[in-house]
Image 1 (cartoon, chains in turn orange, red, brown):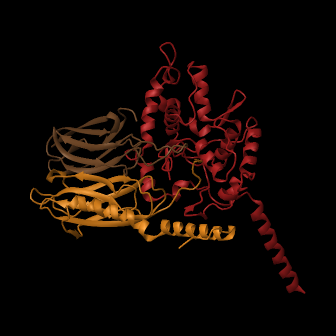
Image 2 (tube, each protein chain N blue to C red):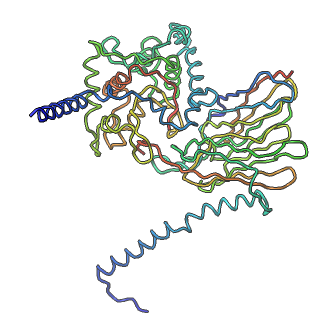
Image 3 (spheres, chains in turn green, orange, blue):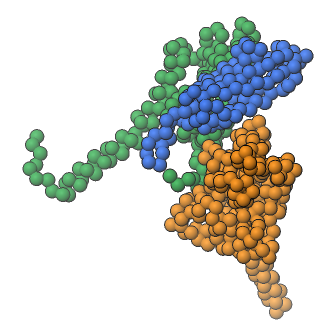
Length: 158
Length: 260
Length: 109
């Protein structure tokens, strides 16, 4: 189809506006939001190698409302006797809403006594955080926590 | 006739009481509250437990600096002041104060000592070393009440500081008082508005991911209302800090604190 | 980030044999995430602690991999069983040649 030889200013402005709205729509579309979750899912898949993950035994605790996402106290505990034949080998923490989904990995042994780790993490946004435990028998278990991250008032002028 | 008189008497009393309530300065009609109270349990624990408080690293640096000489021939802080725990006990509760005719903040006095007594260069505001020394000295006042009082020597500066606190500033045209006095306890966005007392400085602010001074925080407040920020170490800053410490008088120091 | 920094370890000095003890270890480090920009718009390169290890009389009993999502001045709290008297060694290794270490003695009765 041949475009009109001349296009008046009003038509041009209308077209620009339509393109602009499409662009905004793409940015705000669910697809962009889920991109981070896909990265998190693929990070989890890398950990398990595609093996099935069972829900339970893993408890992840983060404050439900966070005043500043730069330093959030996170505790993960796994229900395990931590004996020579039955212990947690690794605990992985994956964040669905961070620019990089991996947060940390803790390697334990029967000498650990408990599978209870506390650390302080960065949360870029309100999100769901996962903890995946790899057991000595090769099984994977998972738990999650969701949190709302707010911003501090009156920040530095950038 | 009697009923009418009684009613007007009651009306007059109510009007009088209402006037009295508004006439009294807000700080006397409600208790001072540290912004510690507004923090989550986790952040409170971070401040209270020295094994969790990141500010303790700066205190450790401060302890080393306290012993260090500027150069082989000059003195260290310890040369004059001895044991920091003894000599600096309660000192931070008194600042800002007028020393030799000049209103000095704690940082200002540290630099004064360095320049004059140690023949060492001044430390820049928000530098690791100045923060370390401030944290070390402020820690020696932990739990002690702020003792800044109005005196004949600081009266003029205190009044100027109060004016700064009450005057509108910035593109948003807001005064400190409008948020931190009139609306303390209400919400701005998701955050509770604190009364804005400087009783925990220097603080490890989670927003900064590092330790910082009260002047850094005040500059943040000013950028928050899009105002021209007071310069570090300026007399305006010292006057405002003096007013804030006077306003917080009697409150226990929490330094070094943790804040979101 | 400089090559080393202060660290702090909190754990009991004494314990009964077989008791589970809590260890808190924290290092002074900015943990520059690599996702921040300067005022001029340039990206600030990643510079973080990568690995934390704890050895108990030379046997590694705990290890953690840190990623940029770990907050500044990283803290880790974990447990171990007090098996025998001796030395616990703590080591932090990170980008740009960063290395820090700490020790703590424990008496197990």
